Amino acid sequence: MSLGELDGPEQYVLAARTAAQAEWISRFRGPNQQIVVRDPRWRGPVDGGFLKRTLRPLVEDIRGIVGRLVPQTRWSSLPVSNGYYESLQCDVLHFPTQGFTLCALPTVYNPHDLQYLHYPQFFTPDELARRETTYRAACQLSHTIAVGSAWIKRDVVRQYAVGPEKIQIIPWGSPTAHYPPIPTQDLKNADVRLGLPASYALYPAVTWPHKNHLRLFDALALLRDRRGIVVNLVCTGARYEPHWPRVQQRLKELELEPQVRFLGFLSETDLRIVYRRSQFLILPTLFEADSCPIHEAWSEDVPVASSCLTALPEQVGDAGLLFNATEVTAIADSIQKMTTDPDLRRDLVERGRRRVKDFDWTRTAKAYRAVYRRAAGLVLNEEDRWLLEWDWMKQPQRAPGMADCYE
Image (cartoon, rainbow, N blue to C red; front, side, top):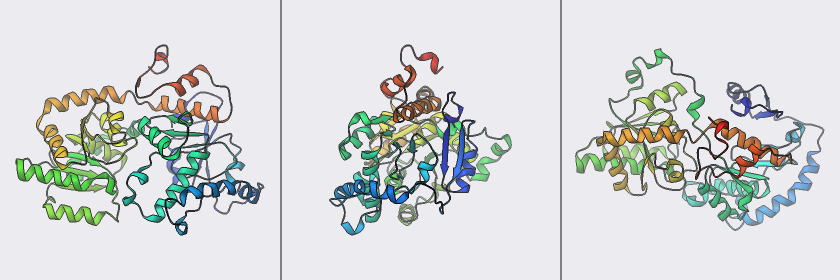
């Protein structure tokens, strides 16, 4: 959306996989953007066979590395362009999600994180092979790797042996910044309609194992059984079915069903309402590159208690209560502080209001535009060069002489 609002000569093509995806994207499309839906039967004038012959040796080089991680029988195929992307006549191709296709264009790639190397037990062998093949190839072959934090940048350098100069740190803003205002009628009886307790902690997360719901439940049981503190928890997000039975089993074992409610995937409006009604955000995740719920909580004036693992301290700064999410007692201590100390919550709300201003979608869009210009071999202006050299985390808001650009 913010790219579509920028002035400049650039035109952007947004390639959707399905008509439904294109319809969703169209809500945010700007005047300098067009949306195309790929026809899986597409056959064009570009010789896909030529592309496969010229790019396939690169794939084999990558697979030599993959073979040291998983058996050869589980190697995953790396897609090679059949000419479709080249037919769009763009100067640069950006893969904003973890998918990647070898093509004849300079590429920008977002790996987001390398969780599969840190927690391989959470992935099937086939998924490990697919990620290792795709991520490593994309990072080594792309012109620019875009990540959300310095922690992830260091991880990519360490794991894939790519030069740090190839990696660009570009944090994202809050997803709720582009959500529509909450209609007045939706606020009426929201507690009853959504089944919200009078007071609760909020954890918005898919029930993937690394989101650490099980330790969170253990912490709630510890507070109830040892300290006499009963804290309600509301969880949102889709259910990851392979792990969901363990989540249900732990709730039953700990007799926490009266305290914990799963609302599933919510509409944009209902998600904002659930944030606003919550007492605080609790985020006990084991691995994050850039947490959307933290941005969302700050945007809705909700205090944050967050895991101190991986990239989260870098994102949170001093605007949240940090704890070690591998220790049940540490999670419980943080919940107790947030529940019983209103002064702490008020202070964190104020800190969150300041911190969320450090993450701005317009600034993010301008940074990506600078990346695209550089990958296309275009001349960069002063603002482009500054954005690409600026340390977003150590000097998050602005640098001397550039304040007027972002007021």
